[in-house]
Amino acid sequence: MVCESWKAKLDTYLDGEVPQEEMRAFDTHVRNCPSCSADALSRVQLKRAIQVAGKRFTPGAEFRKRMQQSIAPKPRHSFRLRWTLAAAAAAVLVVGTLTSTYLGNRSGRDHVFSEIADLHVATLASSAPVDVISTDRHTVKPWFQGRIPFAFNLPELQNSGFSLLGGRMTYLEQTPGAHLIYDVGKHHISVFVFQERSLPARLTDSSLLSGELSFNMETWSQGGLRYFVIGDASAANIDSLAKLFKAAS
Image (cartoon, rainbow, N blue to C red; front, side, top):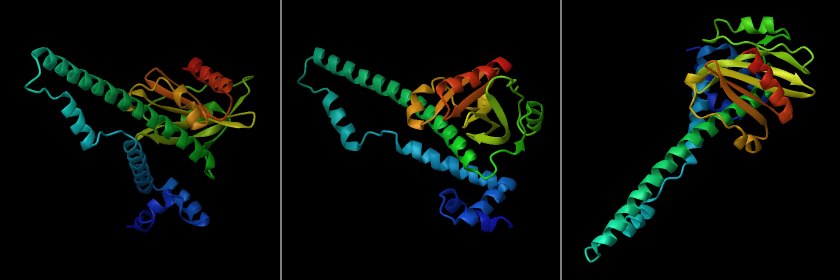
């Protein structure tokens, strides 16, 4: 009952339509209230799912009718022509099935990449981007024990040009994971780590979305974990930090 007044305004808060002072109060409350945090995450996931679903192509009734009429056999046609039309219909069905499968896989992949970008931006825009503040990997790594259902290694950064700011818990597709933030020059880079089995398949190619997201990003699977490295730093810096994590794992 205590959170009812907060939850009544959650949609307004998630749409960024509350005053700035109230927004800060909401940030603090959602960060410290498991119930409101879970409710906010669920609503964000629903909004994104609706956005993705709205971009999928669905043939209209008129289009379907014209296709059926164009391939329907007619009594006056010869056996050979009927066979040709039947083969054409089968080919259309096969192509449609393959296309739907491809679009479904790409849509799921693109949705995950877009959500990673959203998490990166939202965290950096927050007044408290990390929950554990430390440049020491031996302090940050133990903080995640008991908070996420897996363990991971953090790389040694000496003479690398990167510095660790800290970390926080995060969620992707309702899966808990780790979010680390690094600095290189004047740029912030996010590193996300999740269990591979809990995420959609075929996330191997992030280069197709780099232009659309306005970020450089690299993702890979290693030891049952899925890693994402994303930021507005150069592609070379993203690749260098990714290599450090690969070596540490």
